[in-house]
Image 1 (cartoon, rainbow, N blue to C red):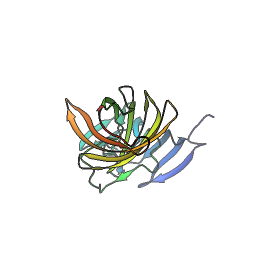
Image 2 (cartoon, one colour):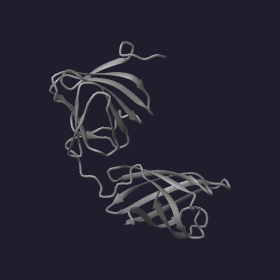
Image 3 (cartoon, one colour):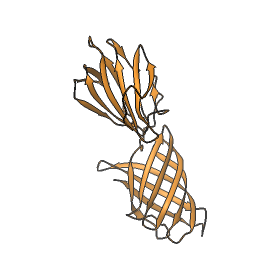
Image 4 (tube, helix red, strand yellow):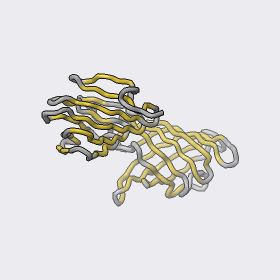
Amino acid sequence: MMRTKKNSDHYSWGSKCSGWHLLKSNHLHIIEEMMPPNTQEEKHYHNFSEQFFYILKGEATFEVEGQSIELKEREGLHINPKIIHQIKNLGKENLEFVLVSQPSAHGDRINEPFEKESDLNLNGKIFKGLENSDNGEVDATTLFNYRQDKDIVWATYQGGDIKFGTLNGKIIGSNLEFYYQHQNRKGDFMTGKCQSEAKVINGKIRLFETWEWTSGDLSKGTSILEEV
């Protein structure tokens, strides 16, 4: 279906600012927005959503991690998750732009004042197996996709002997504690628990893990994961 402002849902925000939902789904959000002169949004960041701003009319002033960036018509700016940012219209005419968010930023916005984040940030990072005990099932082809919200972490993982798995836990300083479960290529459902210490080596995070099966033979082991 062809989308225009006329057939898209409208909403108001801030001081006489407007937005039109050109596309709205859980995985992708596209909005055309308008900001009158001398208006601005609240300083904020997103835990998971990355965004792209594309200016249609006017000039935009962005504050990104304390740095000021000016954008003119037909210029765009990419903002990654966890990056504190704010858009302002300091000009004398309306500012019009398209905002693309992936996944949707709905419910994924943290405004000032910000709570202190964990010193360790694993959000959006991918890890692969580097070393493992013989009784483990993770290898160099197993990839872990991590997400993080403050001190809570979770991940999905698959590859090699593992069809699909999930883990859920928390961060304490530079350490992780989590429980994991997966199905292996033989069709067995395996569960376990793990304590992991994060270290930065040659610019990449490595996770030094001590784990224990809570199914099967209940054996213990160690492994190392490295950031891809």
